[in-house]
Image (tube, rainbow, N blue to C red):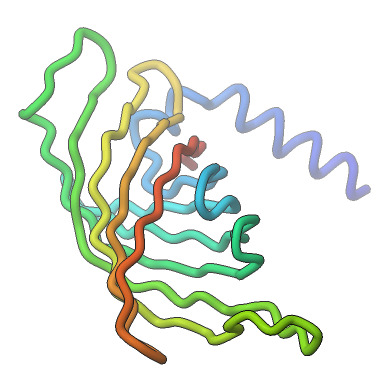
Length: 158
């Protein structure tokens, strides 16, 4: 029974792709870079969105969660098909360090402010987007520190 429901759901997604491309406001996909994990986006208006990610940093062995409020500028870059907005925003992140008693490195958890800037390509004929972003981060807790994240990703919109 579960397999039948999953097969029907996947079939509906494939058959109604154009409907989702025109009206889907929630996207789910992957983000690859620093950190790497699951990315989600919820459009809240014509040019505003909330962006979320739950990801793992392979470099520092930490778990990241972030949420950003984004504003998209669709008039800056014009393309023949699809749309290519520049986006920018502000948000927050929580970075949870792996607890390892045998390691002498700093295992503190961090809370910080993110200022993402990126480019996103919204396909005209598919419910997909791809994006590239650079994110300056100002950690505030447990100490003030400056960092950068950068990533690429893809999302499917429902």
